[in-house]
Length: 111
Image 1 (tube, rainbow, N blue to C red):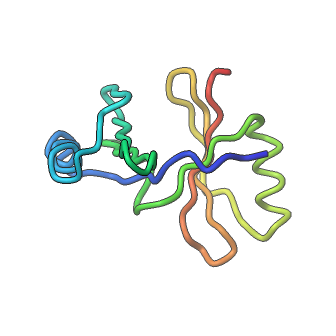
Image 2: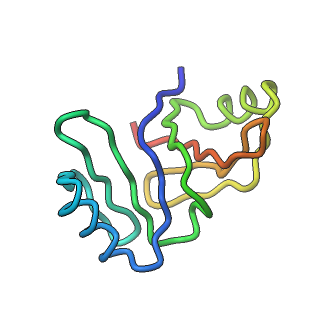
């Protein structure tokens, strides 16, 4: 079953946006690479993933799946669409749209 993992957000100034959410909201940095940083609110346990690449065009939900191919098929069955697939290190994923054309990112880690 897919799991809502975080909210994805693209940044023009990656380091400044990470610093903003870290300092203004008090979110802790839990994972950081040259392509993304994941922050977590310690009170609510909600996560925000800020990316410096073209992986998302707008703020969107990030959904982790066990099987990317099966998840894309289910997404399409339910009225969504796949825009493009990608691989980044051990992760592979897809930029998708829900039935109302809102961006959704699904990804499979290296589990």
